[in-house]
Image (cartoon, rainbow, N blue to C red; front, side, top):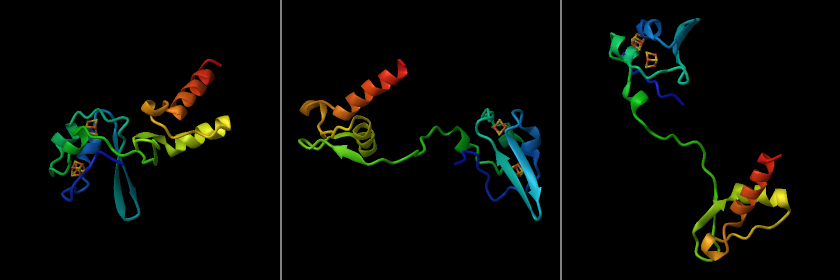
Length: 129
Ligand code: SF4
Ligand code: SF4
């Protein structure tokens, strides 16, 4: 995943790399190709690369547009009474494996979210050890 994007106008001049105040850009030449690299954890999102690029190649908007990227997708277990999502299948498995108990899929209105409550208890127990 990268928020730093260049379009097809990039000609590899390296003005961006040489002028990045945070050393967030780098490059390497290997055989027949030049690769330009960006490190998001170093990037200050200052926009200097965008300003100095003579080719108007940096899609800086991608760097400053606040957006959420999908991290993972997990299966949900629904309350067996009303169908409300109550916890993830993985969380239910984790709790079942840790406690050797079968967890009933019930929402707070229908007996409390058991695995969440058990998991919170387990987590606070671990934190206090
Ligand atoms: S300054 Fe622009 S054209 Fe030059 S390497 Fe960087 S993105 Fe490409
Ligand atoms: S936004 Fe600033 S810190 Fe980030 S790569 Fe461009 S010049 Fe470097």
